Image (cartoon, rainbow, N blue to C red):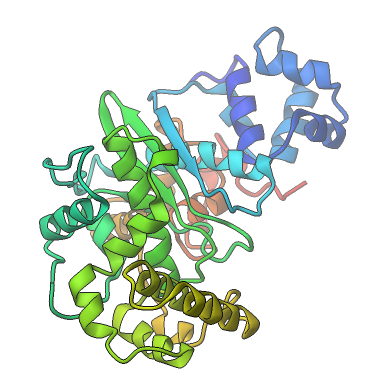
Amino acid sequence: MKKDVFNGKRLKIARVYRGKSVDILAKETNINKKDILAFEDNKYKPTLENALKLSNILHFPREYFYGNENVKIVVEDSHFNPNSRLPRVEEISYKEKLIMLRKLFLFFEEYIGFPELDLPNNLHRGDSMETLCQKIREHWDLWDDEKPTPLNLGDIMTAKGVIISYMNVNKRGASPFTQKQSVEKNTRYVIALGEDRNIAPIRNHDLACELGYIISDILNIPLKKFDCDEFAAQFLLPKQAFLNSIEGTNELEDFLNLKTKWAVPVSLLIYRAYSLGVISYKKYNYLLNQWQQKGWNKSEPLDDKFKLHDSSLLKMAYEALIENHIVSNNTLIEKLYDRGIVLYPEDLEILMDLKENTLKTKNNKNNLKKVDFKRKRA
């Protein structure tokens, strides 16, 4: 990694990563906005003093700005949840965070074989939504036409080659975000979960919607012609099994009992019942009004009974390498540095779904020559 030439492209990456506009960064560093833009465009280089200011405010090791990208990750497409309540700059920051996540994935892939993307090859644009869902469920061995089959879609999609990030599951207001990435023609879909609080019904619904986006992308169907929510309902609640389970279900409490069988939100069960003609439009509206009046749109009953303890692929990979003495925390950070992944331990912990201070080491002597891991936040 070169240490003598400031890389303006990395300054922009770091700024976007932290969700900061040029105006905000200029104000926080007391550096002229035009100068920051010039730094990012590599028109001229910052002084050492300004480089340190940028490093401190953006909380990236100074050495990060003097390195080059050694792998090209192309973002082919992105899917933001239209109902997201996060500021736009924070949503955009996901782009860089998921790119960094993929770099970590590529690093661990040198040691561990991760599952390849596994979707049926018989999906067609002309297929009905029900047919698409049935083909995928059958391909993934999830099909049961007789009885409810509650899913843990996080584990299932991970096993089928979709990369899932848990960094936002407790972040207030966060919505799911999916990125289609390619590295030398190897395409992967990376999903950052939203604020699902590790609750299975919420996660199942969110991931089924994101799976709908993935299917629409693979089939080259514009999202305005593909209803991801409808896909989620049909995928999670296959027609005949759902009809068998819903007999005698009429009131809101009945749908709450049904939730225990399917591990999906009550609101989705009500919608599916209406879409299949089991309840009238009038009844549908009545139930949804009740659901809202009870505050279930913010938190549904029984959610705590569906708590998940899923682990991300990166967390499992890290634990495998540590347990088998392939790397230590010190050597891991050094190896990542050599791959151009220059981040403070707390950022690596967030990306890898590790507990706080997992990567903290007693002796950072070797790392301090390269990265000042002890520097505090500005």
